[in-house]
Amino acid sequence: MILSDMSLAEIAAVLRKDVVGLQRHVAERYWDMERNHRKGGKGVIVQAGEFTSADRVQWVYVVTISTRKTTLYPLGWYFTREGIHCMQIDAEGPATYMRPHVLERYRQRFYKDADVLEAMRHMHTRNYDKASEPRTYKGRPAIASAVEDGFLLGDILYNGNVVDYHTFYDVDMGAKETILRDMRKLLEWRRYFNAMTPKGSGDQATDYVNWGRGYQVRLERLRAA
Image 1 (cartoon, helix red, strand yellow):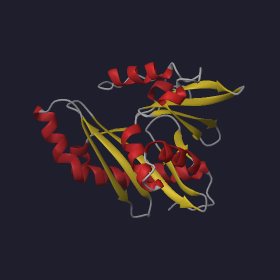
Image 2 (image 1 turned 90 degrees about the horizontal axis):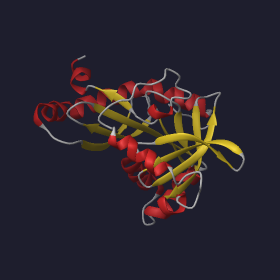
Image 3 (image 1 turned 60 degrees about the horizontal axis):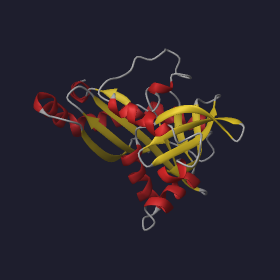
Image 4 (image 1 turned 45 degrees about the horizontal axis):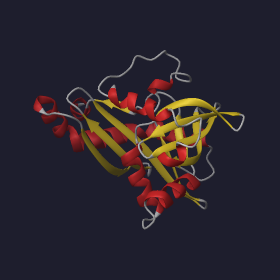
């Protein structure tokens, strides 16, 4: 369970522990789709869903299935007095946290007629894959991430291995920022090589190419376990 007084590092730890239950849920729901697609499918199947675990952790997720691999992108979310918060966790690299302000900014830009929770669902479905690199923002070290609908910018919290995103730029706004505009090419490169998993350097703190790549899973094996 996530409590409002937890630190971001504590929340990330809860999500990493709870993701095992999410993986089992996804395996039960999509294993047959994975098996059939691997036998003779083409391209990539993208599915999205929601799940509440036995420990009352609330998840929104995306699962992508190609003939070669299956990847799960988990996003946990919770309420406080400030609004809805969410955090994506991945097998490698830091957890990525979005403040209520970031979600509201995204909602205002793309889904003005939806509530924040619905906008968050759309945001994750469209922006689960993140291409990240360090940048200098206003004279300070920062982490920038290119996503389908724009850019996220935040600070790395080394004591908890979490990126705290504090702002969102859509594509047009980001194009006006010198530190962001070249990152569209980085995202395109990631998509071009999406069918493969680059070999990492072994240091998750600086292995930016593998940040935001979700969890590679084999659903049929998880179901059988």
